[in-house]
Amino acid sequence: MAHAPDAKRALDERGYTGTLLHGDNPLKLFEKPVRDRIVDSYYWKEQCFGLNAATLLDRAVELTFIGGTYGIAQKPTPFLCLAFKMLQLLPEREVVMFYLQQAGEEYKYLRALAAFYVRLAWEKDEDVYVTLEPYLSDARKLKRRTREGWALTYVDEFVDDLLCKTRVCATTLPKINPRGFLEDEDRIESRVSALGEELEEMEGSEGEDGNGVEEVGEMRLNGNAESEGSDEDVEMNGG
Image 1 (cartoon, rainbow, N blue to C red):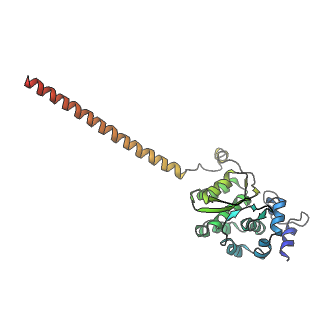
Image 2: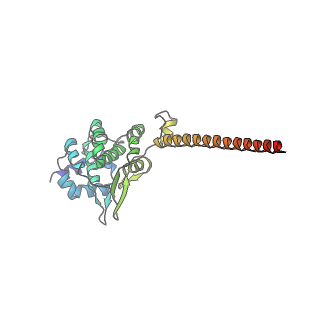
Image 3: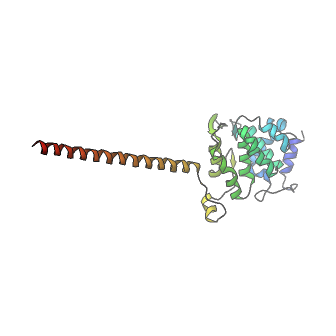
């Protein structure tokens, strides 16, 4: 098929004149052994041939797990093959956001794929954080293919890995500055955590409950004091 040679031609240093990402050929964001396994895989040859930004969506909604390479032969997952195809296609930002937002609401593995692509391809650190952080509240389950078998993760956990780890899905991620550094540089606003708001509400309710307990305690003390005073009056009158 012409599909595999096309991919290899795109990796040819002498023949590549396309868009650069992070100063290099986008396909080289994957290590050479992984690239070779992808291009030689059955899924790449049969399912990724002739895909464009629109038809790739049809393949992506069929995904049932995420992952990098698996097994003794370290075969690439369909997830990794489609991410590689996205790096070859370099879809418009509006298309990626559609994958991530609207379509991602229904297809969680499509959202994971788009998030993985954003982390790989978008060059401004602040754009990566602002785009991916809203999905730290997506608690849907994801099945992950590992080298040895299977594991369970979640969309929010996967996004957190993309923002915090240096290697995800058999891929070394481009370097990204810590969020705190970007905040200090005024390149990004401080993030308000939804969990932080919940904790504040809990602390507030606990404070109110505490005040209520104190008030009840004071009422009981006053009641006991009045009762003791009444008993003394009775004794004095009786005497």
